[in-house]
Amino acid sequence: MLTNTRTIRVQWGDCDPAGIVFYPRYFEWFDASTILLFEKATGLIKIKMLEKYDGAGLALLEARAVFKVASHYGEDIEMQTEITEFRRSTFFVKHTVRKAGTVALEGFETRLWTVRDADDPKRLKSGTMPAEIVDAFQRG
Amino acid sequence: MLTNTRTIRVQWGDCDPAGIVFYPRYFEWFDASTILLFEKATGLIKIKMLEKYDGAGLALLEARAVFKVASHYGEDIEMQTEITEFRRSTFFVKHTVRKAGTVALEGFETRLWTVRDADDPKRLKSGTMPAEIVDAFQRG
Amino acid sequence: MLTNTRTIRVQWGDCDPAGIVFYPRYFEWFDASTILLFEKATGLIKIKMLEKYDGAGLALLEARAVFKVASHYGEDIEMQTEITEFRRSTFFVKHTVRKAGTVALEGFETRLWTVRDADDPKRLKSGTMPAEIVDAFQRG
Amino acid sequence: MLTNTRTIRVQWGDCDPAGIVFYPRYFEWFDASTILLFEKATGLIKIKMLEKYDGAGLALLEARAVFKVASHYGEDIEMQTEITEFRRSTFFVKHTVRKAGTVALEGFETRLWTVRDADDPKRLKSGTMPAEIVDAFQRG
Image 1 (cartoon, rainbow over the protein chains, first blue to last red):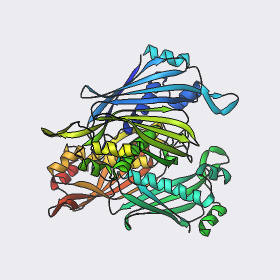
Image 2 (spheres, chains in turn orange, blue, cyan, red):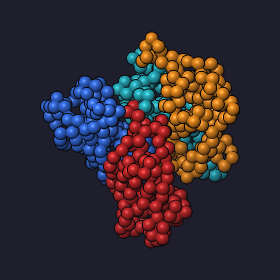
Image 3 (tube, rainbow over the protein chains, first blue to last red):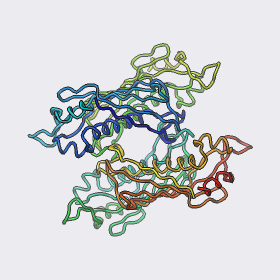
Image 4 (cartoon, chains in turn green, yellow, orange, red):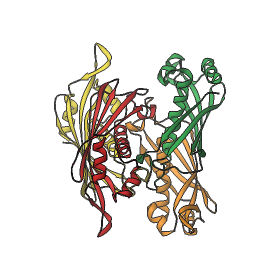
């Protein structure tokens, strides 16, 4: 399965008065990493991908993180992102964040491929994950 | 002229490792305060106001802040927002932030009332500030 | 058990290009709500509380959110926060976010009362949750 | 004079409901770029640099941005940062942000080298910018 790995330098403004990353930042980075992984799979930025495959969004059903080691300003962390399972409409994302080789935290997102409701274009409903996208992930 | 005053409790996550507000947060609060001031004037949230008056946005031309006293987690600051001048398309916003009565910082935004270009709806151009909105501000 | 309820107006800058709250914002609000709940219980801001009870922090072990209904700019959401269980060092926080009375999302944090290691003050270790604080929560 | 140039990919979560960068993000990037420039000059992260030179911070006196062209999710912007003048305690930072070679916005920060007050270590006062740091910038 395709993975995306990127290094994030922890900036001063990412940290709180305890000098460690303010935790919602990790979720910002998770969201961006998930999108970057789809870009890598499809060669398209999110908006273009949704247009091409008649999708409306990658709706978030659940997000979770398990924290092991704190990170501080000036440190580099490595975020590795992969999709652990595709179901019909739902898929599961895992983010593994390492600092100097050690797992610092793990993140998990459950997301849903949504499409516009033909009867009411303002409404979204779950769609079938396009096979072409699933294939692109599996080819790696 | 109409003004809007709101109290902001500085949260832990608003602050940096020095224990003071990470300065971009003030600009987040300026943006929200400017929008809240227009809501107060028109009785409409930004999206509804733009719809009603055929506007496309309150484009930012310039933003500036002058910092005098830092603020810390747990402190309350009072942000007072007013429009100091309306021109044809441009208007000038001033934010005065006080802590325990003392001016802690001042913010300034120059914004432009934009409309969609009839020849190309994807393009925005400067429009004439609706007189009804200017009146609502001046009535206070 | 003590609860804290607050209304959050969703601001323009809290939302993403889909016009809904960018999800890490909810975790920012969770963090602030947890701290506000401790303030309510102890009458002290976090820094003063930690000083008084020789604590070093409320370390986050796990954070999770389950999303049901999206929220948009201009909407008011109500965040209700409570501690569902205190163990010796660990405690469990639940945030219920309602929009017009309907549950829009739920958040969960597992946190640890940490203290400084006497042998190495730079290191933190789990401590025993101060009974006085637990009592304050239970008196509600 | 030393400059620092970095490319920033605009992420989905950096953008507002209009689909363009929510402007406080630029100030987050300015702050990080200023710090990265000092790292480049001194070979030290901010905290280590302040320790070595008995500094307390790079206090912000004024921040300003002039916006010309909006940026959208998926675009790459290039931020070039330089110090345009060093005075005794104060220095002036300029950030030029280009998109596909065109200037999209310019940012300006006025900052002050602060030191701890010997009579009251909790208080900060302006210090003299260390000559070694100024030299490092001028050697480029």
